[in-house]
Image (tube, rainbow, N blue to C red; front, side, top):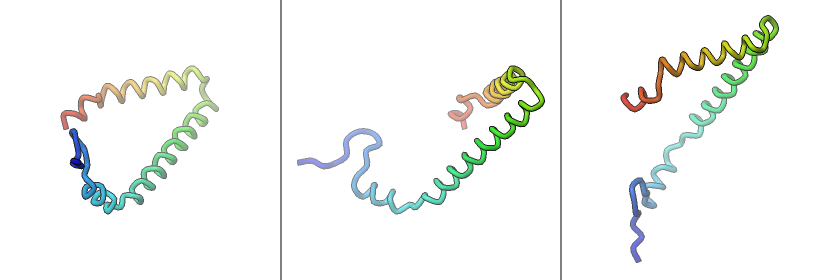
Length: 81
């Protein structure tokens, strides 16, 4: 019986053991905390803006920011780096 990995990206038992040895739990926790802070900050900014501006203007502003961000940093840029 052949137990070698088949296909691209297949891992052997030794590869899995080596990957488990790299402890990336603190990095994962940092990413989760960072994403929570960013989400809460964005939510706070929207609520703050809604006190002054109508919903349509705030939504339009968010869409404009997202479009500008996408134009400045298109997905193809990541493939070229």
